Image (cartoon, rainbow, N blue to C red; front, side, top):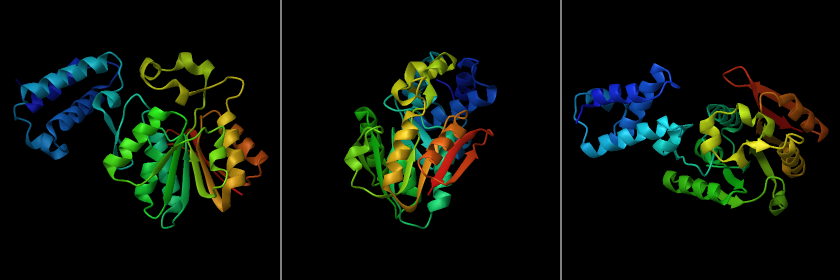
Length: 282
């Protein structure tokens, strides 16, 4: 058996070199915090504490899974997103930092109000749950066409004790919601053309659901078109439509929005300087 500090060194040393040395240590600490039920300060305070054999075995198994290419978040079983710890597994995409930036933009825009919100293609529920958590007076619905993803979103809602309604609906056929009016519609739909598949990293292709990633090469904007058309008819006056977009498609999505009558459109860059978010209003 070894100490906490020794395990951090061992864990870092055994991880393969797709990670930087800094990332390796961060990952090691994440897993130790998880299995030892420590917070960040307790890792330091207990650096000389001995790790129980059962925990050591779990950590060794985690190293093996990560080195086989399984995403860290799937091995760990959760990810931190906009202040929430979300259950994370292969039923839905791993929440990304740029999606947190989109959520933050929405919260800045709608904080202090009580919007009725629809999250289209909710996946793990990360957007819907974080919006409900941050805008307490909101009424939030999340829809997805993948039942496994909806099951995961509901599990996250239950464990976080956040009241969001999750339902089955196809983003391309939102007829079940034809009688609703919304203050805010948000979506991070599939937007990666199939031609780009060969450029994707193996850990994404091997583990994350392809239906949440890819769109046909000949119609990459199909989700943006369908959701924009629905939003045109189902947003209240001065309502908001927010999209996460492919960095190379922001101007194309803007053109779609203009063609459907949206005249107040703002494109924002993420922290990497890429055009990744759009807000549109009439």
